[in-house]
Image (cartoon, rainbow, N blue to C red):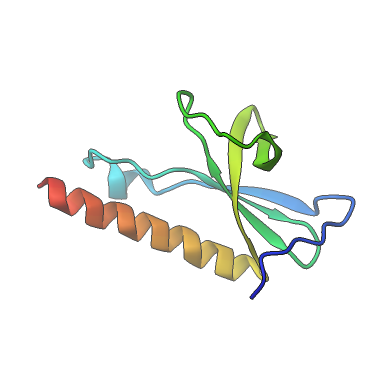
Length: 100
């Protein structure tokens, strides 16, 4: 799979995916929110930046509903982008298990 993006002129939808609070409430390391943008045949995955986090590359930053997101990857389907998010959250759970 290539990560080259052929963008159309408009975003068909943007969706913010937030982690389930009850699953992560007692963890020291908290998972990030993610945004999926449907731009035709591409589903762009972005991670929300925290307020104190900066990015070296301004061109891969997006703003949505007053929050900043950094582009991560281009997926061919929304389902694959969601699978990546769930995988990231699983990794956060594993990291937190080392803290116990």
